[in-house]
Length: 214
Ligand code: AP5
Image (cartoon, rainbow, N blue to C red; front, side):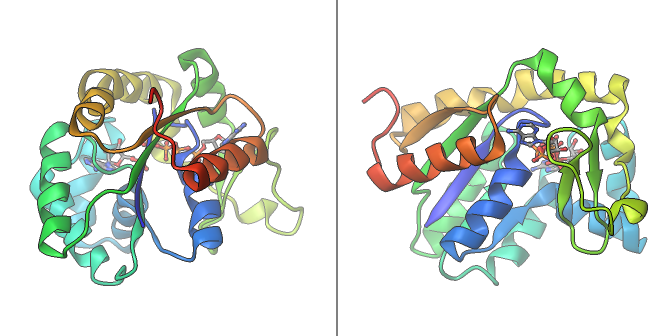
């Protein structure tokens, strides 16, 4: 199965993607995680990407497409795309890349959370650099033994979060219409609920395979 998770910054794509990857036994391809790893390792890609990420801007498409092609080599049975595609051009490229592999997008899940809740989520987010697991200081508290090593993302400052939300609205949100018009099964999920409730609904929708609005 090839599944896209759409949603604003902080909507819970990474959280739900990790749970789904484990449940469905397919890898998560998270372009943001790949870029952050390159920044941490100080590679040329990381140096190029950092200035876009810190400003809350999108990294150029050609860089991202190279990363996705590489990641797909390890994803022969399908993948969960988190944070990709981010604009119509990336969506068209993904369609072509999958076609070359004899595959297509099986479903798109849009996780919806009101903007005013997003900022609180992002400022309370902490990541474990050893496991990559994502926590929230209130909503998904980390176990005591990992608490001291948790880090906060550079782009989770309030001003940058607001800019990322604007970029999402203008550039990424049009993908909902793009996929609806393409006839790909599209599901809208209320992401403003407990993590396990959101996960339960996504799994139920995928099992029933009933496109939203049909
Ligand atoms: P990326 O890493 O993709 O960030 P994003 O899309 O802005 O999304 P986030 O990772 O911030 O949020 P999320 O939806 O995964 O939420 P999470 O599960 O962590 O991209 C970062 C940057 O990289 C971009 O700005 C851009 O520069 C670049 N980039 C990446 N991909 C690109 C691409 N394709 N093209 C161009 N540039 C690209 O949850 C957030 C918090 O809320 C956590 O603390 C979590 O514990 C908590 N939480 C989750 N679910 C719930 C819930 N149901 N209730 C309460 N709290 C919850």
